[in-house]
Length: 403
Image (cartoon, rainbow, N blue to C red; front, side, top):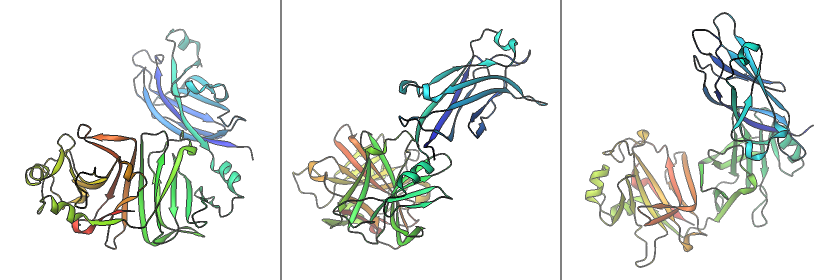
């Protein structure tokens, strides 16, 4: 089969569009056509500089240089009660594009009727090509001979084992799941209680966010692939260079475990505290009043040695008096483990989890370079956070780990 790319194409706006009625401006929408693909934007009524800012996803041919090829046709239409009017057409030759043009491309219109051109408005359609990736069919063709590769052609999901000389074959799988308007990239751990902690980072990106899900009894992704942990890259544009994806695996031999209740109790936490109350009641903590975050040192820190990690209590900034351990569903308070940028923490893994049997969803973030907190007092390299914690969960249910 001819190699193809899944392309993200954006119709951003129109500029100085012509009048189509004597008493009103154009009610504009755009039809997008590429090969067998056809779609249209929403209608912007009575607006000669309409903003659509809509994205469409479709396949186009891949050139020899692995960049997009083919023609995209854009038709400008005027919406009318009885019959819509075709106003003009613009075309984009993808193979003629330069990399510097991809974000903002102005296209002139060829008019269906001479009267539109006589208005002399130099009308333009503004479009963009945010990114692309190999189509599912092209990816499957490239990977089908890889030992252990698995595919679901109905859902357009592809999974391939990640080889590493120090890990059992098939312990880690990389997943590319093609959705209607995105591609999800995931790493799966295929054994229960695997002796490693896995994280993801994107080289060259300041902020990498991943969503984590633990399946204590396993989850069958498809025949031949049952997983016990899922690590998913969040908000990944199609322009991402996957050669920059780093899979970080830490030996899961525990160096220490702390109960979060030990941490907060050592700073004087008692009962349920709102942000203002916590600031008054707690001792030996650092507070970011603007972000409404409270940093707490760990009781096993060594005096005189810079801390590697801290417990972070992050209040909802829209609710100053949010009560901790009252209603997690409203996201009043988030409990996080902040790993600081210190040499001793660089090769260590950290985690925040629950010791109960309930399902666990988490997020983690990596900052390259580290994120400055509290006027530069702390340089945060990683943050681990529990998501959707059940109502009634207390600090004593939360565990902090270092590997």
